[in-house]
Image (tube, rainbow, N blue to C red; front, top):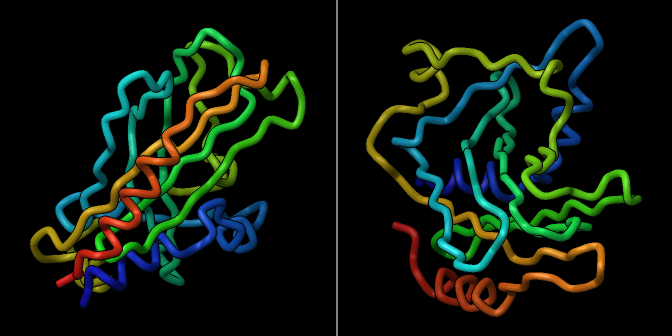
Length: 183
């Protein structure tokens, strides 16, 4: 039951974190903790031929208030400027979220060997708090691995109108995971 709480908190929120941004004031950064991988393990789908590569992924949660976000960074190695991308999170049972980045103009397009922008507030306004034993107990972050969250790139759209598309695999994965039961 605990895994459902964490998975749904992390995956069924708006991943651009307007709640985090709304709670941030100019003088007080938002305090977040990183959820241990021993509790919820992020898993990345291998996608041959995709010019976007995952470099890091972790779950974070507000220290007060309990809503969460996903921290990630990608590296784009394609030859053409990238206009937009869509990535998705999925869990056993079919819960998940989809998020998209779309450049508003040519200056915002992602070039080869650039890191992909994160979809969260300014990192300077977010304070990462160490996960102490006290915080771990308070937030009930103890115990064995309780679930996985699968991250995949669904679609890339290049500035010239072409793209990379893995939507058919994404749809099959949604159906497959939706048929599995969370224990």
